[in-house]
Image (cartoon, rainbow over the protein chains, first blue to last red):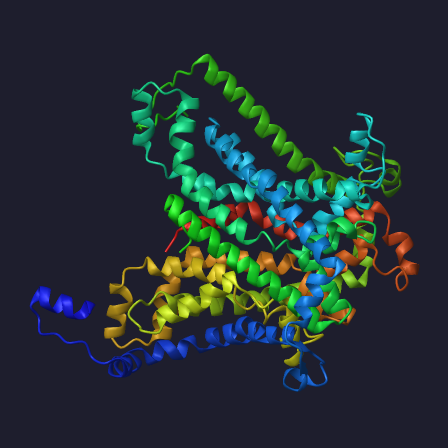
Length: 319
Length: 299
């Protein structure tokens, strides 16, 4: 239809070739390009789409000896087992508790830091604050988690500092009640600077005329912040929020595996660590694949849903 | 240097009292945050250079090295697994990053050619993997079926491309005017020549960015090694570090562990494993930051 309309509009007698002919022409012209792409395509097929196909074992009673073609199909049994198990509520509760706390406390921090840095007047001080706060992003999780356990041990600097305020010194990582705060605070410590870069560059990109106009209208610094800077930042904030929502069910296992211990499993075991321990420690391949698939599907629906919602509401979207 | 007004004229800016108060609060907040970030890092550094006995007695943060000594480092380097860990990490960083960058360049180049029919399909196929993954169990089974268990290649191949980094690269290549590759093609250049002789040199700043991202990720990675490797002789530094710091294996290292497990030696081990990255970081900060900004640019 479209092609027809444009033909009429321009008065050309151009008629589109059929798909097969166009494809042949394209192949002839871009053969070299497609050959070049083979290794990349192979990577995605093997290591990205391969595991997606591998999710089929979630509907099986997979035995490594029999392979994916010889194992028995069991339908939704593994999913049912998961939803009915005691661990379903435990890992779901822990995952959501960590994500939501993260969204409330960690998400706004880089935005605030970016606003603060932007208002600093001395160039060198600004640069120093940036350099220092970006630093932890480059330190490995293994090191950061060992620093954390060192600082919060019975004699650790943080524990001793808190003791001045009537805190009873304990090994904090062995107590369930401290797990969440320590998880969140160490996360902020590591990421606040790095995550602020994106907001900072958005602030730098704001048209200076907007500030001029605000000033002429008599707006002070604070007023400019709320009437110019923050509204201009909103699209970036929304995009980051959508991405964060998509990760709601995806609390990473790497950090928690380094951080939890049998005493804190009850509050620290999340979907991803559960998948790891069921699959790779207990070798319940199919069951853990089902749990992982549940996680992937819900995560995807969440990004898709939030994206759609935000597109309708504010016009900002990922795609 | 004089303050610059928003309209570009230089001159003294007048601040109201309220603005001055806000400014002071801002400076104080930024200073406190910087200290909160810096002190735990300096604590490790100063602890590593302090006398081990002092470290044992000490409580609170180290603000300077107590009875400075290099003794802790001499113990660290006596540990053979640190040296093999270093070598393994260097292998993975060098070979892994080279493969990462090569594949990302190819992918980015193809995805930035808008004329070809399949490119849209490829883009969709690749971006989809950013939002939906098979997860670690099926990935493990794939690596296993390829016979990569207990091979260093298991640390390199499954993560051979980071989609994010490739998209960053593609964004940069899409900004090169089409006339450049096109005129080269008319002169008879093939796609691989255009990619490596024209596009790559033109985008070298972005290439630097993704080289750094990949290299840092390899240097700091521990989980794939934990998952796929069995022989300790193949462990990268981070996994060795994890064993030392979290004292996983009290059995095999019992004899050494007396000397090696002292707090001060742990600090020194962290310094040895982290310093290479922290040393290059300030010089390359510009590039790191640039990557985030390119990545933020939408379609």
